[in-house]
Length: 154
Image (cartoon, rainbow, N blue to C red; front, top):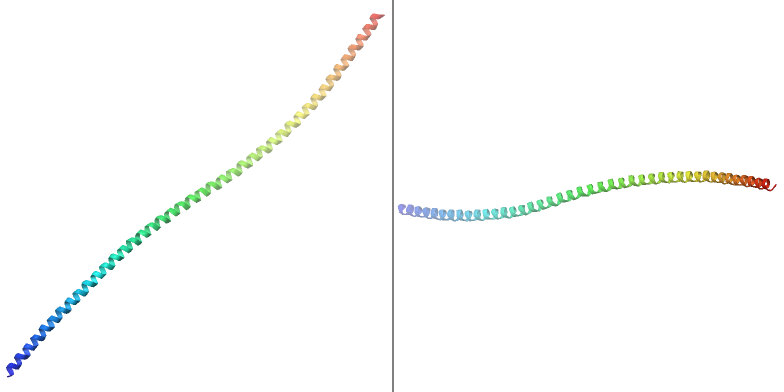
């Protein structure tokens, strides 16, 4: 009887061990599946993250290009503004030079006009003197001729 009981206990124990093994195997398989699923999820997340990062990287590169382009355009604008400022400065200098030249020209012109007027005055004076001399000479000649005529008539 005792032997039979021991055999039954042995059988139950073996049965429980088998069930425990099956349960362990099932649990291991379940964990393996969960782990596999987790790995797949992680890989998918990593892939998604990589895609996002590469998109993000693309966006960063695009942004960097835009920023670089903006910097270059800003530099060009600064250069153009500098040229414009230099040009304005040059124009002001030229305008000042032109005004100085015009003033000098005006002064010279006025001086020339004054000289011409002086010469005209001098010439006029000489002309008047020459006319007066010619008239005096003519009068003297006429007087001589009168005296000659009178002398001839006597």
